[in-house]
Length: 256
Image (cartoon, rainbow, N blue to C red; front, side, top):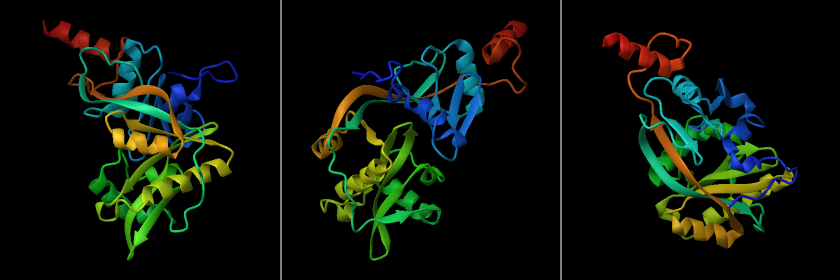
């Protein structure tokens, strides 16, 4: 399921990582050929073209470096000789009437709060959150007796759209509506800029999906999340005219 862009072109939500890295998040982008990725300490996502060629996969492998995983959200499959290390089916949900409003208990989080944010993420596993993820947008949290017990914020920022992410609540305070309040508050921040909230969730996390739908999000499309490793070893020298794949083939031929 994919809604058309009103301009008649591809909808930015169809390739959200590319739309973010060529738009509001361009300052976080690293590029090689047609491949874009977030800086390694910001987010794991890599943008692969809709029609990836062998050279694109070679460039993706070179951009993340030896042993680095190429993590995408799309319907694209890596080459057969790559090792898929993670795969999950997902859903993309968009705002269709979320009751966006400030949350009185919410406090703004910033770089000084990152150690506590990383600890909360480790306990609750809401998805990727790295040392500089907090720089991607507004992050709000709730503290109880000084300790951070819940948070939510923004991740992918596209022209006209911003993704709500890292929604998590410590087990000790679940059932108190903190997650709902924070989602409403982050959605309010996004709406105040004249943009529309959206989010991704694992399709298997039916409780979370039902919660988001009850808050006013609707399914826009199904997608997938995938991380894959290039074949080893990558060449130590710079690629020749055939790219990394061509260098592998040349090395194999020389060994025969």
